[in-house]
Length: 586
Image (tube, rainbow, N blue to C red; front, side, top):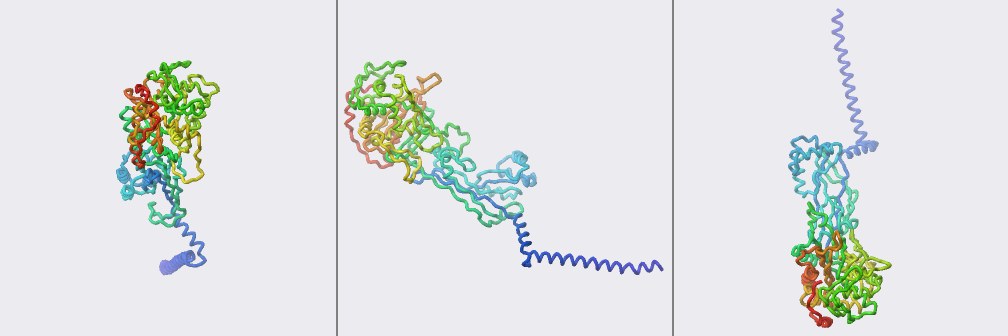
């Protein structure tokens, strides 16, 4: 009987428990529904709804940087010299990428043109980080092919890459940027703050793989950099670069540079250097090729400062262009050295001293002048002081100052030894002669700023004009610079052949060939300096090596600038008719 009772009671207890459990489950479901309604439907749930929304946004919305466009660099006519182009850079989250599998890594390495072992090694190095670059500055279509592999942990970002359309022709002046678009050399470095933009920020929606699926809002607009307009005229720059490159190659020289100034404004119209390099592909480029020699290198100008010494003589009031200097017997002994001319020129007036580049004549003038007065004149003309171009590494040169000058120091100083200049300084000094004694500030950048330095008179106009007339005789049939002549135009200038310093003083077989001048001599438009370093021993005189570069470039420049030709034989050339035609190399 006891067994039968247990069988009758058990089913009732089981039904009761079933009902209880079912009821509890229903209550839980109802509680969940009410909670969801409270969070998402009822007005009082605003705080809870915002909490869930914030949590969801935190998992899908990210803030990304918007790359800023770097300002362009153009020449005075608007021709592009440096411009930024949009590119894509690929990056990865190493923690995610390592989980992609061996096959995915191999496909990714192949698409990136990397060896799989190299990619694996990089992943190992960055294993504890969440960011590493895979490839920088890819063309957008190339980046899309990599992203199409859909490898987890691989992403892209928009950046800009600098491109230099003019290539090596203006490389040392413009300079270049690094991979992060920051200026490293040249005007890219000098005006980095001006050219650089300010990056922006935007919110985007990303999927579970970290890919951007929707742009939401701009939090901060990206501000592009400002454009920079240089004073350079690429037409003249091309002429200078072409002729300079040819001269360096033909004369077996190690290097060279040319500077062209606008005498009417002080603007640098061309600044060419050799050797050069391609800023778009700097692999294997030597540091020496990146140097802007026209502003950074300092050199002894040699005979190109002899006209400035004659100018000091005229300014002293004790000399006139017709003053006779006795150069007999063709040499002069100065304590410590004997200075000689190629031949005995006999008696020369000041014009003849310049025409023949007489070492003896200049030495006698120098020893008669007060040395610090000569130094002060050089300084007024711009030697020994930075021209204020703002170019990184510009050298001011060396203009010695002494309480007591040894006679040989006075002589050397007068004909261009014992002091150093850069190419732009020498061109500016000749521009002062071209401008009848007015010195204009030199500029590499076109500016509308009216507060810039004003031109100043540093030499009396009649004296500057007298020296300019003397410089015309250098280009004549009896002068040392005949190869600088330009058909249809009067040219004024001076040659220089400078012994270079070696390990034991001045070397007998190493030279620097120089020419400085301006054109047209009657109404000057351009002043220029050409320097060829270490030409071959077969031909090294300034009149043979540097002067032809000036002549070729200025022939083209006069046509490009549409300067009307005017062939007028200056009367000053008649003053040298009695001079010997021998010994015209300096």
